[in-house]
Amino acid sequence: MFNYLTHYRNEIKRGNIVAGQELIMQLDNLIDDLENPKYIYDTKEAYRRMDFMENCIKLTKSPFYGKPMKLMLWQKAFIEVVYSFKMANTLNDRFKKIILLIARKNTKSETCSALALSELVLGNAGSDIVCSSNDDNQASIVYDAIDTMRLLIDPYQLDTKRNQRFIKCLANNSKVFKLSDRTRNKEGRNIDFAIVDETHEMKNNIIGKSIEQSQSLKDNPKFINITTEGFVNDGYLDEELKKCRKIINGEDDSLMAERTLAWLYTQDSEQEVWEDEKSWSKSNPSLGIVKKWDYLREQIDAARTSKSDRMFVLSKDFNFKQSNAQAWLSESDYKYKAIYNIEDFKNCIALGGVDLAETTDLTSAKILLMKKDDKTKYIYQHYWMPESKLENSDDINAGAKYSEWVKQGLITIVEGNDVDLSLVADWFYMLYKEFGIKTLKTGYDQRFAKDFLKQMDNYGFEYEMVLQNRYTMSGAMKLVEADLKDQLINYNENEIDMWCLGNASMEIDSLGYVMPVKINNQHSRRIDGAVSLIILYEIFKRYRSEFLRYLK
Image 1: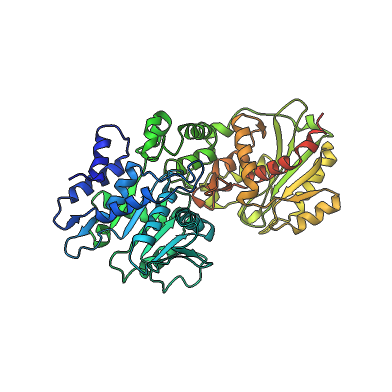
Image 2: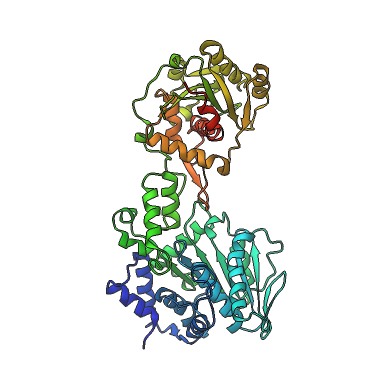
């Protein structure tokens, strides 16, 4: 008898569809289970929902808005498997939990919104259907799509209604509502069908556990986790995917594993992403139909030269987990010949940037100088640290050479356990007294800044706050990376700067904003020199036009 599960696998075997090994292994496992007497494969409910989706539901997103939904083969196989496997002893659905890992822009939200609307209309009377995510805005993506779909079917709201709390089907009293990590009283619900979107952002399983507990009295509950890969380390999705891969590999024969469907669209290697664009369909099953080849080619082209773009594209478009265990820069990005003499910049205007610390971290200060008709940014810097940290063994094991750097005059050692931050302002004044170099503006973070700011005021220097968050630092960090790769930053081969740049990793969020962090969050890997450079570049971005007018 024909079924979409087998048809999908056969199309992969014939080479008409390119699929990754994790999906192929799961499809083979499921096809083997068609012959297992523990299960009955009854496609009636699956086909009933697919019929509703293709003949009643219209799409909600441009450029397909208002057009009938036509399911792709991967969608048909997925929906069929979700609803068709039955436990032979109870006739209840086999799969309670479903994990769909798929790259962005492959219609995961639209597919599951349509499935939820089908459940609202065709499912059990009195069902509670929930759209959930880490926050209300993300949960609203699926919820609002359901609402738009039902209005395209029922524009006069004769059969369905929406109020501030839920969407309701009047014929069977089923309803759809939202649930997020910020929703109060998450427990005590009675949920039949749940879609949890973008779980890669969840640090814990509070939402997931709340939904699972709410479904404990149901015979045929559905918990569909739809997501791309992400950037949260050791979060909820990491744990779920570990379980999924054990299930696919036959390493988990528990009852929970039997009732879990892992449907993972993943690549087989990172190398194939760069070398074989045909392989992109492994994580993008809608490529060429919904997601455009040109778009993905552009993303890959940008990712070849930018670490932040590379991390974002590999995660969101190819489902490779990205973490802060990776260095932000390769050695070749910041180790190159570049020497200059600060005497060449006497009586020039500069921009300043500082990363201030009181105890454990280094304190770092930098100025940025430029010459007319020269794109190079010349960086002059100095560091301070408390005497008590001079022999810090953890830092030394991580590559610090504090004693050598003190002898070279790169670090000033301050007596006691903390740094008098007025000394940093004194350094800017020293530049003015000895070289006639005056700062147009100096960027600082708000932490520990009181003594520094007071002394800067005494000297009449202007300063501006630069918050150390991903929204403020993202653009500057990307510009630093680009200029380093083009060897447009001459930092006099300062060894501490090199060490700090090598210790820096990149934390990236789901919107592509980045900020510097220590590799693997290792405390001894100091990145203060990298942070002060990024702060300096943020000030350069803000005052570029005014600064360039002073160049000689």
